[in-house]
Structure formats: C-alpha cells, structure tokens
Image (cartoon, rainbow, N blue to C red):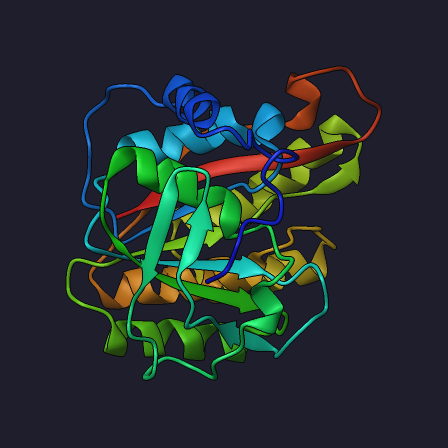
Length: 252
C-alpha cells in the first residue's frame, strides 16, 4: 500500500474537506471520451482550479494510467508501481502492470505528481484501476516507447493522464510566451515538435516526456487533436515576481 505523502500540504488531509474542495473545482460541461489529458500537479490552492477544467471535460473509465515526472531522484528511470494507492478518500486499486515496464515502488514513495490527481478521479468515479508511472528519463525515445507499451497493455476504454506543470519560476509574461509554444505543439498532437520546442527554447515544463508518452498513446488510440481547456499560472492566485505555469488539455 502506497500511503499519501503530501496530504495536508498540497491538499486537505481531511476526507470531507478534500471532497468539498475538489467538487468546488468541477463544473458541468459537455464531456468527451478523451484518450488523454494534461493536468498540473501543484498545491490545489494554486493549480486545482485549472486541473478542474480537464477533469470536468472527461468521463473516467475503468482503467486510468497516470504518468508523472520524478521530482525526487529516487528509483528507476521509468518506474511502474504495483501497489494500491491510499488517499484521504479511500484506496485506489492497482491494475495489472506486468506488461508495461519495470516495477519500482521506490520512485513513488515521496512523489506528489501522481498522488494529487487521485482525489479528482475518486470524486468523479467510485471505483477504477490505476497504473502509476514515474518518469525520471524523459528523453523522446523513452517517452514514445512508454506510450506504445501503454497502447499494447491497456484496455480499449483506458485514459492516460500526463501530470505536468509548465514554465517554472519565470516572470509571468515569459511563462505565457514559452508555454504557448509548447501548447501549440500539443494542440497539433506533434510529440516530436513538443520535445524539440522544449529543448530548443529552454522551456522548464517538468513533465514534457510524460506528455509525449500520453500523446503517443492517444494518437495510437485514434485521437486527432489536443483541446486547450485552460492556461494560467500561480501568479493568477496571488501576486508574485516569478510564477509557475499550469495548463489543462484534453486529447480526443
């Protein structure tokens, strides 16, 4: 059992308070059967509202894979957990992950990028199975390979979530400019273009490899476009000289 490590920090540790907060971020809109989404993973006070734009747009299927960057440096280059995940809202069961990649629970022990997505999914659907994957190695070839493995291993109706923040600790106008460059590539489902744009323009998007893996999966499952749902930054919440960018997108 993987126990929560950022409850009470990134989001409320009390179940009732957490559910109420997540529900405040969700709203009614036309839903799509997305193959993938891109969502941020900061503290809910900063990025929860933007994440809500992505979750409100989709239907949650039986099996959900979440790919998050490895911020801690622990574990393998690509680490797939075979543990159930606990949150203040209950337990999320692990899907059979033997066919996907090397099992590695250490990389998940202190990592927040996957954990913070789970309460949104739990509020939207009572029962689903989870594939939790950390990426320390976000090279293009590694990301494409992971996307193909997920396509081969997951049921037809599955959803892949790329957990990523955008530009980190830059002035707001620079974050908006650089983030828009990456977003344009994602709208076109151009995985290689995203990789080259991030590298060539020094865009500090922490989960670009996660996004590439998700887009590879989504493309193989028939997705044709990425829809920008909301873009913003921590500077929208409170004044600050340097911000972190956040983006919500759906791929279908």
